[in-house]
Length: 247
Image (cartoon, rainbow, N blue to C red; front, side, top):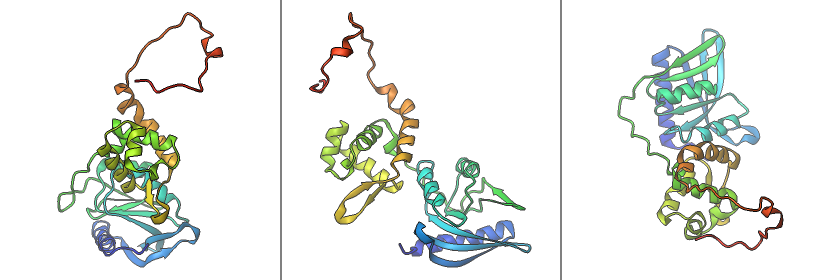
């Protein structure tokens, strides 16, 4: 996919701010660069300090949130070259997380992380010149959103079904399905393949995020009950192949 003009503008600004903040040279060397079987990077940049030079494959993301961090990291780890994330603004919390994951980044506010011994840079807390729009909480990881994700993960191909079918399977409002599908698309978990329909990707990562969020978001809202039986071996003789959904 061709690097968009807005992404190029963002990248150039981030490089300028990086140079001004660190006094280290950073040059744009190419746009839309092929990376063997790993697809394409948005660009390649060179960072030069003293007599040393490093090459980075660039992934430009206009916005970065805690919700989208997992999918972005997955994309960066596929690059055969050393990756670097370029975005508008990285909050201090997300900057710490990127440092823990050892993912280099720069933003247009002057925040950055590079760990290329003997060069080490970690800058956080710089505020953007213009206010950044507050991130909208991802509905996909709210209680009803988790119900939709559960239905999608348990029923391969359901993501390409009409929204009313997804709504029926997940037992949520029809409008919730639309919000969740939009979130999944923005986070990189859902792609539209045109005539082949919608396809859910990175399912393992999505399942791990669902499992991590479920105990806090969905489990407390589920009806719980305690049951007992006079026959502890009932399950050995029970017929379970013709059960009807409880009402």
